[in-house]
Amino acid sequence: MKRFALTACTLSLMLGIGVAHAGNSLSRVYVHSVKSTKGGAEVIPQGGSWTARDHGGPVLQIITDEIGYGHGAQARLLGTPLREVKYESLCNVRGRLGPCPRGATIIGHRSTWDASGREGGNFEVVVLPNGFGSPQRATLQIR
Image (cartoon, rainbow, N blue to C red):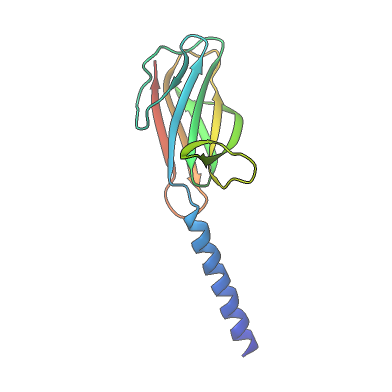
């Protein structure tokens, strides 16, 4: 009987963790902005598929946001892997998504990808969810 009770408690705990974990799973990934020597800083409208400005030069950075929790993010520009140079937590700050003040609840993460020295092209980022679901991806044509 003790063994049955222990097994039932363990199974219940595992299911509870799974449900809580699934609630925090990755829900969305998108390109937040592009910054470059040539094109300056450009915020990309959500759902946007290309930049309005020409970008490139000695400095080119692409900033992506993930809402929820994911792992294993990989980004590519014209098929070439990019290096993640910054990773920060995101919170809901007065109704807007932004860097987290002390004690705030994290709802996602922002990554900055380095594409310096390149002149643009097709950008893609893929993030695997921590819970259930398919990998999330975002693409952007950088002029």
